[in-house]
Image (tube, rainbow, N blue to C red; front, side, top):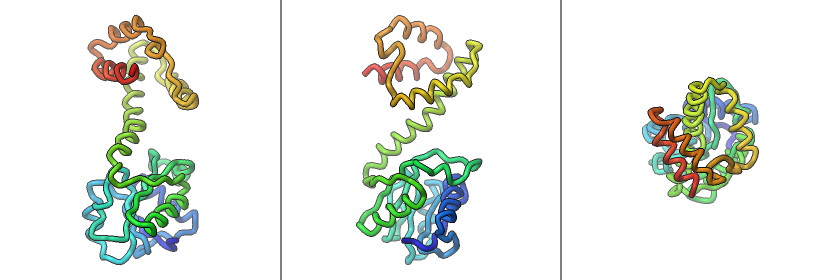
Length: 216
């Protein structure tokens, strides 16, 4: 649907996307039919305004509305729902889902095509639902890092190897997030021991909040 694409931004997303487009036979060059903005969210509006009207314009942000692409009318977004790193290549996109947002049928068709070309499993996301969507993505990815750091610190304090947590976390995902442990079985005596161990750790308030959310 696009024979050539201009990828603007060479960070984690831009590098993986450009490499994947090249793999799939889509030319990555200047003045492409599509200007794909892979820049930080705060820069999207400024970069979009710097592009003369004519080509299609899209961004890959999960949280930024399409209005940031003004004054362009031929616009859409494709958000790869994946955490990316510069140390890996386009294979990072394989099997991930991709949120496609568009305002009319042709734009949606082009967004779906781009998502599939990148190796993503596309789904349609309404522009006014981005807040909930991106908050969910951030909780699942960003807070997982926070939880791992906190759990690793507790393991270090106990003289246990933090790397032992990874198989536990991985198996929880493989088990379709089936909840186990003291909260699931109503073992509040054990929870109280956790609270005692966490006092002064800097994580006690987060633990309390997570207990309340988990028990409901």
